Length: 378
Image 1 (cartoon, rainbow, N blue to C red):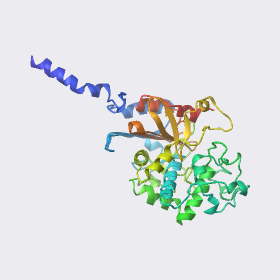
Image 2: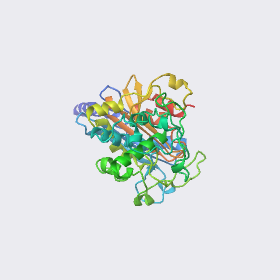
Image 3: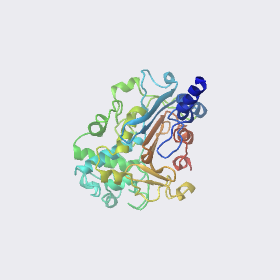
């Protein structure tokens, strides 16, 4: 008679684990009690023909401590990097978000005025139109409303440092994603601080938040850590060493390190409360990938930009924070859901790395987001 009672009690005790844990909104999570998570990510990876994926998912409690933490490196590392045990990936435009945080830290200390024209801090020699250049501010750069082209020349080329910068839209007229704007703001920050961006970021972010394998420039350990990247034909394009530090795209990191930074953003660590609110509040107006072209996904109006970070307005999760990274043959994506205290980031060393956005968000959040269409729709 006792055995059935014991079995019933055991079934009740372990039922939540079998069904999946509930988050604070009562949503069932696929991830929290999934023990074969790497296998499921590996299935996604193999179908997309991606050599290597590095991911990290964390759900935090009210105290700010992790309740659930899942991470992994999935794929064949021996075929994608020289050696060692911890891979490092190109973060691409995820580089910009760390820089935006640094700028806002400086703003909180009174070291930079977000609305003071940047020519007060650095030269504007490369600009074709000096009158327009004199209107550029840190705020406009972080909002992507500079009116600048993406790049004057390929930023890794020998020609880029001396290339002339053009405006393609009037200043502060339209959302216009620009790496050139970020590079201009980088020069201003370096002049203000009298240091390289790597030195600044190391002091402000990397050393403070346990990010030992993260850098805007090449570190000696990368010889045994940096992964090769692959095109859509699965051809190995080698390990990429950037010729100069650039806050728009040269960050090298991994999911462990970058997840630590996402925790900083989630909690607003190191920023005044009103500054964090300013950073994550949509302020860019309509955000589109290919201005002045307006796609169907753009017309929905759910995607916008704060200061250095993307936002999406959702019914189920509230406003989520995100950014994508695209260096051609290396892709990245992070998502923060403040309402649910969840963070997620993945890196993929393949041109196919954004083909899996919906599959990854379905796995980790039981949902898909407009960001997938915003990233991939032409």
